[in-house]
Image (cartoon, rainbow, N blue to C red; front, side):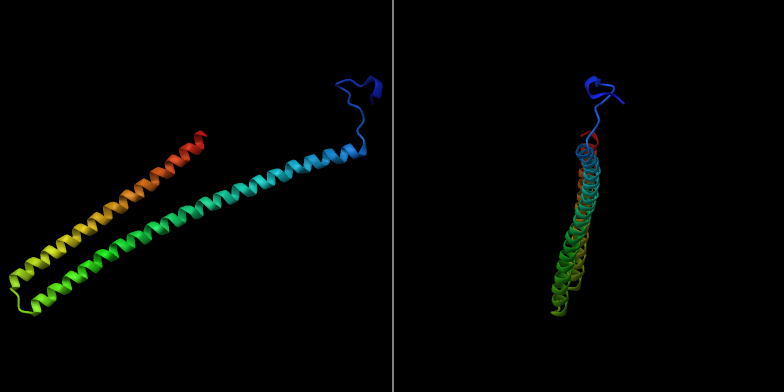
Length: 137
């Protein structure tokens, strides 16, 4: 053991009990900080996952609403056609009208499908951008 008057960088002076307790507290503090950071990381990951789930549910809800609007319009048009047929209108005109109504509905459904695909691609693109940004800092 080194004498206090001859202490060198290789030989540190003795540590008092209060200083030892302080050093142990700092060592515990580092561990506690790491635990807090780990917990924050877990919470952040769970939050991101919940946010993505919410976005998917909102997209599905929007999709279902779009399809239900299209189907409601189809039912309205078919009802108008049935009423026109019941009143004795020309059968050929009714058939042509039915074809037009169905073609328009199919076109709207195709358009809705394309909008959904576009939104899915936009969301995936944003997720890839976020991952790239996180990876590059």
